[in-house]
Length: 97
Length: 489
Image (tube, rainbow over all chains, first blue to last red; front, side, top):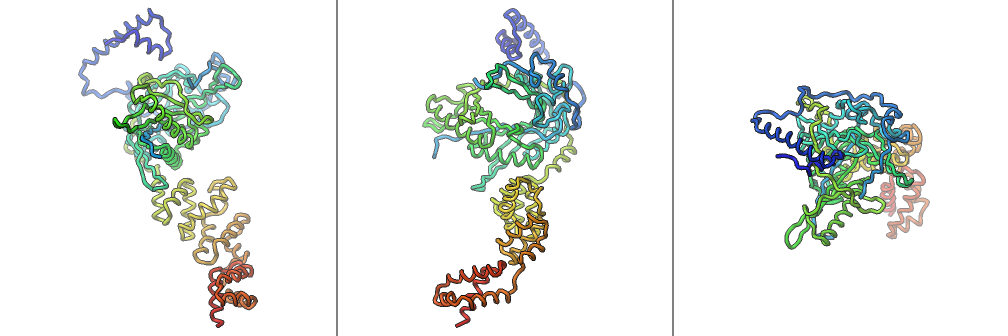
């Protein structure tokens, strides 16, 4: 099966990863190996096996609808590279073209 | 105006659920707090935190799905929808992909002018988290966008319809009915100004051409901030697509799907960034959340909490109280408490039509003037019912009843006290006859006019009778005067 350099470039862009040509080539080779392995697994007869949504046996974990303390704003904002004391600041996002 | 095309519309509605806390953490969902004061490590996506699902949010989602006639998935799970945007701190939204909590429902809508019903099918209803809010301060000329994450993690219901809607007006009708349903279910306040109800629409045309019916490319329309805006944006978009089709001839599949935003000021749609294909979101099961299995018993408990829904309520009011489809439409639209008041009023006064009229006119006017809800209205349905009962019993006419009603609003007196005090007690036949005889004696000119055939002149006598005693029944005065004049001969 395999994954081409072009496909890696597209996925890297979606994940906001900046890869140079050498890295793209390496990624393509490594990911191809992983996919080949998946191909091998695919040959196993699984028609009688129920699909697994989660490796844990646990289901239906809930919490009650109750309020808990939020972070003080200074503390929440403290991790951000830039803020104005009220909001996080990011480079302008434009909705339109 | 017969256009050579059919409009095809599907809607995607996002509704904020009425929970105290967010979907996966205990931060408040309250609207209007100062920016970034309702966040915690979970909803701002700090490493190492784990989301835990809010039970109430899940139950409200199920309740809505049931009311929308959906099939409920006994096994459901959550997935990560990956994309980068500054208001999405984790870099993914927790949503549902291949195993949503419900599918295949419908909502029936009734055209109030024709009374005809149509089913709009629902593809799915699922539960997901909301993103934060980005603010762009272009006026100040700043290069930065400001991000408020208070809303991040608020529980959202996504309701997706099939492309069953055939006109912008029908889209508005569907949304109005959906909003009413959600209000009755008490799952959302549906406040569009506060963003608790958001609508995106997919629209294209099926154009009839000499070569057959041709579908135009589908456009997703966003940024519509009221139901009226939805109707206008879709009307604009239909006309725009037809003009574009005539110009370019482009059909569905020949150009990538476009997203356009509604510009309320300019009343036009504008092109926005191209939508990423669904596979580009690279959905995968969220390993931080375990699946949810719903038992029949749990489902049954939620089913019983659904209660009477608007459509069923309307037909019941029509058959129980003999009111018109229009009346039931208006009453139900005002909410459950208004309907409850109406039904009690109708029971006490014994006349559904009369009660419906008073609800829509006198009471609606007072609520409107005083900017209050029916719960805050100072007269109980029983008190008012006592008053209205006197109308069909012919003890009061509508005009006098209205005067008593207005007095009751000002004072705390009972109907009986006020009717007595205002002299609004019924007159017996003898009293009316006395008044009539007196008037005939005092007005020989009128009497001779009537005798010579000018029956209309009796109106003057009726007017005078009302001055003598405001409680007289004008019809009876008229009848009696004419009879007495006849007897004179």
